[in-house]
Length: 143
Ligand SMILES: [Zn+2]
Image (cartoon, rainbow, N blue to C red; front, side, top):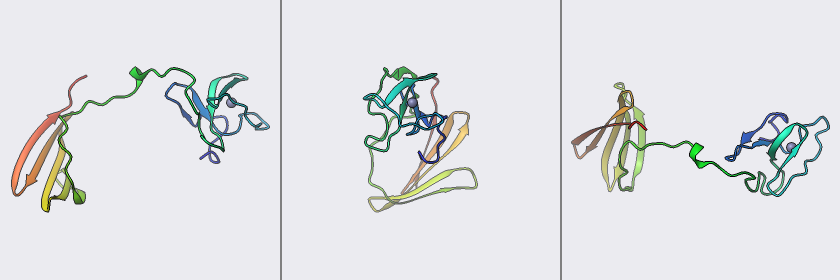
């Protein structure tokens, strides 16, 4: 990746907001970078930034700034999680009616789980187990 990336464009951004650049410096002679313990530094017109390296740990070793976890993306579950089950021989497919179909075997019994979007932010689920069909509908809750 470092061989493909440009030198004057960040290759990524760390959780603390600082940019991450290639292993060599963004100047005309691509001088070897001198960095602090976190593999970052300030120079020229650049704000503090990190660099990748050819040696361990290959990327920054610590965060220079505090991470604001309130800015991190979050998801809201549409239902309570269940108990994990042991599954084998699973296949995914999509039906003509728009169902995403998961066929699997659990404890030697074939089970089918189907789901599809039913309206904006709502999903229909069907659990077919020993020819018993259980239908449920869940909608994303507003934050
Ligand atoms: Zn630099």
